[in-house]
Length: 501
Image (tube, rainbow, N blue to C red; front, side):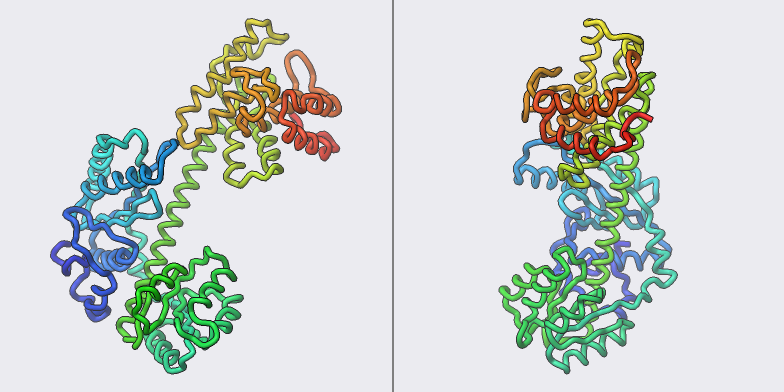
């Protein structure tokens, strides 16, 4: 692999020169000195080198692996400087553990994508093992958990072999000069790209209301609405999160012009007069880079969803185990989680916050795992000593849940869902706003389900009796805001369906 390198630009086979002017590529990559170990790259260089390494693997039937390392920082009051320093340590451990034929790019603030060419699965595992051991010796290892996802590049190689590159990209060119439009259209069309030509900023904005091209080439200097104003209005029109890449066309070489375009979200500049080779290389480079970034973002999102789903399955199984200890409260944890989520939704929680409070509801009674079955299932009212044993379950639950570092809030709901708004609850006699908000929500949900469920010593209360209990506890046992939401839910439940089946 190393023998195919050209300077410091990465692994590019010599027989690709008919597709790419290497001088143009060198100018685009703006190379720096290659480090002694892994080739660390910004996004500008990574897209091209990654693509050509794939072509090399395909041509010579090579093997390669992708690794995605993610740094999970434990909760803490860190300054921005400390956060940057911790991530820098992760980056340096990765760099020093890899070969000079490997390439690496940072994604966002805490993920690192690596490509390791010409390597077996066995040796990939050895690389991962070496990185983990090196990280265990790092001074920040106690603050950051480093996880890794591994995948072979077989799918990308199949894409190359079976012609995915024949995809016809759609390019929109915006320029008031008809000669430029014709020139760009001819060059791109000859390279199997679909081109739409537009002569003004306003016409372009109207066009974009109903269309979504793959890339936009936008002239800076146009009469009426220049390219900068056009892009600004486009971002307002379609939202700042638009993923359509923009390249500016300009004859102005000033740093101020370039900086202004980059601040607006442009990915590149192409200088006039336009050169066919440079135009094609930059357009292809940008399209390939965006596809790679989208693919990586989708992969990170997919892995995150898989991990969240797995965690939720584990939590549900644990909640079922908790409920199974109590013959009379089967399904209690799930119902409390449902009620708490609905209270939080009506209060205005975000989707992510709703997921978290649902998990808190499922695990709020996890401490009951440590309570003797004879006490939990006693078919009569508890003695004072037995009630003291029961009152230990919030502390025991918090001790269990503190080990789930991804959701430190879980301990809040477990430890403090029996606190009272007036300060007479347990275990810590917190009062009012001292009680975490999620715990105050779960307190209402938990009490509601306890009253509407069958107990060993009584039948479920009537809906009217439950409503009166919630109303009387407003401001004493319960936060008035969440008690009021619960009362609204009761009033809407005309058939009294919100209870134990």
